[in-house]
Length: 297
Image (cartoon, rainbow, N blue to C red):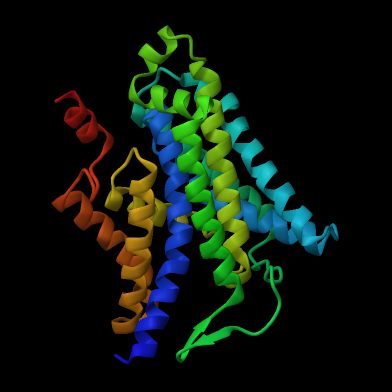
């Protein structure tokens, strides 16, 4: 493999890894607040891309405004899911709540098929122009946006959880919801905020990736699988785990394309997920329960 091919592999891996990390962060936000895996997270991503494409192509909105509208609407959908479904069975079992999110994912997917049809939707990259060539490798201008905004969001979330009162309240609910409630924290509002942020992150990921891959109604399951695999690889319960897992999965997937048919790349995520759960169920950086045990010691 030449140096140009290796560099191309790194660029591709970092680009898709940024998307997987954003999806994984959405998973972690809801998991921390509810202990539930939100199987509708992939639909948030799809909806972000589709809403932006419709706002630009049909409504004629400028791209920057269409992006804001799409992210806000997907965030609002996250709040609606919590209000209409999750909050009604807040004390239900983890399996019950997970099945609810799975059913909601199917509803959103079917609704998108009926609304926009099976054809892919598309809008122009944020920055027009030819790709940049770096030592023989090709860097799409949209990929710069994907990586750059992805990193900014990750830094902003770290600051949010470390230095804001709301972020610290969300962390308190993640550690022990009953104790947080006794301390005067509104757990219901905190959980709803986690759904809003999760939806907004998913919508943002869809906005970023659509100029590179197009948006179709049936992408949600694949994106959810890869976001879940990123969390499992890094370890559920902490933002840095989803980031590490996302970039690791992106690089592994990019490397697999170099040696395997491109049609098998989605199978790589599933294989990584299975191996991660078999070899180190707590993830590369340790899961939430493992960290609690360490802190208690």
